[in-house]
Image 1 (cartoon, rainbow, N blue to C red):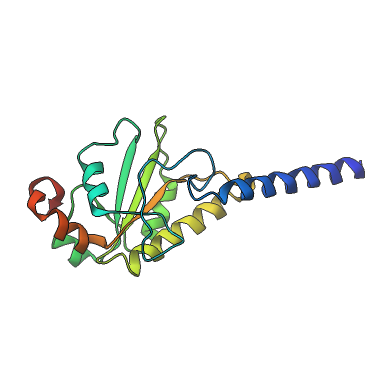
Image 2 (tube, rainbow, N blue to C red):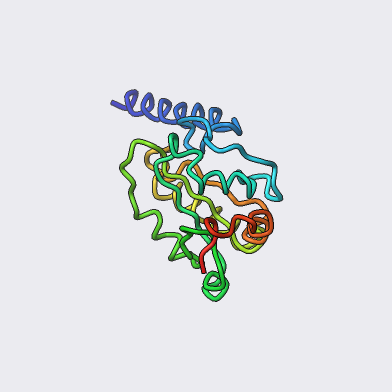
Length: 177
């Protein structure tokens, strides 16, 4: 009986080691199940996957709809900033409780549900909430590592300011007030 327990512990440890080695590839989503869908750039936060404002515009225009089931744009700015203008379809989640509420939502589509975080410049609040969500998602799924509710998450490089500046000529479809 003791030998079986030792064998199971070794097997579980080996599974975790194998998963971690697989996840070291920067091209796989955080649970190692597949490649990232959106092209990413090296942003200010090297530990986070970042996308350009141009990629965000393509997402909004449905360019990736054949591969993506649902996109949630998480605007981490304060409500008064959000109310002053935001990316079309964005949700205003600026507290840890708000971000935790995402983990309770389950999307059952076959295509991936991706999250894109941002704040004004994607310098502080957006990255902080992205990391918080990842940490909470890992904790929630620790018994089934490396499973995650949201394996594919991005940060909008340059934040709302960069998106607004680069996409202002397309304001009619990209922004809401």
